[in-house]
Every structure is written in structure tokens, then in C-alpha cells.
Length: 201
Image (cartoon, one colour):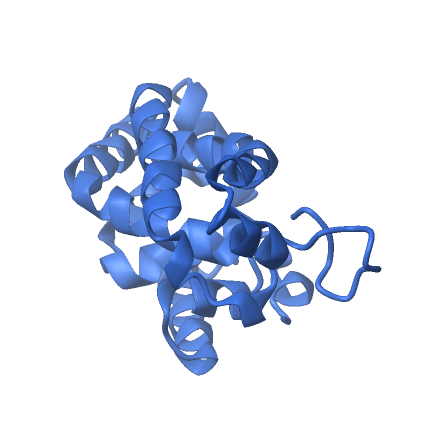
């Protein structure tokens, strides 16, 4: 984020940068510079680095084209960008499913690298990564989106609600259901890092 919404007048917010870009398109580069690496990293964790190059670039291409539709009252462009990214990832559901199936086949003792290692590390159950990957892969797309936006992108429930354009309660419900399914798949072990404190928005 360029600056928090309540920052002083000398520090531009994302909203003010986007608004100025309506008349001066080059100013949108500030948003690109602030968020491209983060968005790219998130996509690489969900899919792979090669796909991340294209999806991250397309995210900002779409955002630039739609910049006049950005809700300036939101201040931060972060949830908006993740919403665009999530929609683009939806076109690659098969790729994501293959990733989780591959990770599941590695089993509990198999080596992991790249995407698999990062996902396992984020959910704090590397020794159970085979079962965990199967469980994550078996989630509905809606539940998986919420889970991974919270765990991998570190968005709050409020930010996820903005990103997916759904009510806060829907986010909380989907995350809770996803977490229960993962816990059941792991024999009652809660695989999540402590997300409770980071989800209040």
C-alpha cells in the first residue's frame, strides 16, 4: 500500500494514486510497483512461477483498464488486485488441482520443493503434506480461494470479502468450513497456523 487511508496529506493513498491515474495514466505505475511482487509471489505459490508471470502481468493489465471502476472509498488497492487475481486463477483450476494431486502423491515422506514446499510450510504440517494436499485439493473452489487468500496472501477476512465481493460472514463461514475439513482429513490435528489474530479486519 502506498500509504494508509488516514495518512497525512503528503503521503498518497492507493485510492488517490488510482484517481490521479484517471487523468495521468502513468501514475498507475505506482500501484504496479507497490504490489506486483506480492501478487506474483501469491500466484506462484498457488500455481507455479511460469504461470505467475502471465497472471500477475494480466492482473495489472486488467486493473489498469478498470481503474475508473475502483471504489475510492476503500483506500487500499490490495484487496481489489487480489480479487482480479483470483478471477484469473479460476481459469487455471486444472493446473492448481494437478499441483495438489502431485503434492499428495509425494506422500508424507517424499521430498517437496517449490510450490509444494511453500504450501506445506504455510500450513505448518509438513509431515502430513500428502494428506493435507489431498484435503486442500478436495475443497470447493470458493473455500480454497478463501483459505489461500488468508493463509498465503495474509489477507484479513475484511480484505478477502472485498477481494471476492462477498459478505464478511461468508468469508468467515467458508474459512471455518475449510479449516474443519482439513482438520478432519488430518485426524483432528489443526493444520493451520494461528490465523485467528490476523483475520480481524
